[in-house]
Length: 454
Image (cartoon, rainbow, N blue to C red; front, side):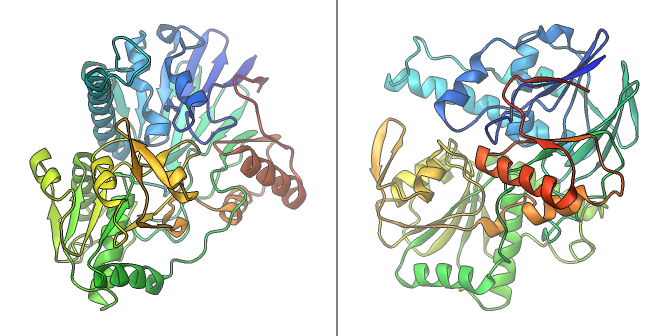
């Protein structure tokens, strides 16, 4: 008998972890961190529900923190098996995990110095040594790979570089885990492959109840131009992986077409800089994941005014640039990293604009700003919000409700059941309804730690 247990991404958009058990074999599909509200983040500190040393393998769909970020913690607790992923995910996840470990240690040190932690002494969830040990376990694959009691095939998902959905062949069942599905119109990446015929599907529902509007280039141009005209700074808290590259590509187009002035563009995130190198290498190698129009031409990420900010000293100097400019910095939901220093300096200024180009998880500073907060707490101090704050979900790299339904229907064979995961409850409920009404399939929204037979 095979079973599936939902150890994350059930009732929340983060912490994707799905445990498959078959006879005496165990493997984990994704290994993400919980983010956002305290009630979820505290679960990162709970002992893992099964002995990590008993897990035979981990399969990563992609490198984002909410799908890969718990891996060093799992290693810290004894996991030593292979981590199956695409070559692109191996490259990008190494960057993500090293950065996450650095931030864990930095946040613990800052909390210790400022005395605002409930723990004494404040400790990181994992450290750089744990991250390096996790990276050493990566087993990149481009073909079908055999695991104890299962075979895994990774298919292009079009969400970020290296992203995949995982087809899992068990003894008598076929399971499909979507990871995060990309959009048909991603500006850099080719769209997701059609899904294969399977018995059970786990599908994300980040935007399960919403529809993306086409990106209005003129609206973004007006926002940036009006901010520059009043002498302000445009700050874009952006996910370092993929989103920063997409924003640079968009800014290059806006400047080329004369829709915004030629302003200095600062990319200020160690992880985003490392990820940009991976994306540039993919362009040079003409990766089959990339759209044809992205490869073979000039650098698609440099608007001609790009400044790469490497050191902390440089970062502090441009914390408030003092002239019209554009700053892209991580993290994308303003949960940590260099963007916090920019927010602390720029939010009080009415001339400035903060653009939030993607999904903001409840409980994050980004969500608080999007919901109209008048103050936000940064490094233990309250900061007034007087800057203009604008959300632009058009930049999301997640498929919307229509695209999710279309992908599910891209195979003629209906599954026995669809488990709707990785979404807020209202988004999951709406996607369940659409699957039942429009496709005529059985769909459910599983609970946290629920266990089902496959």
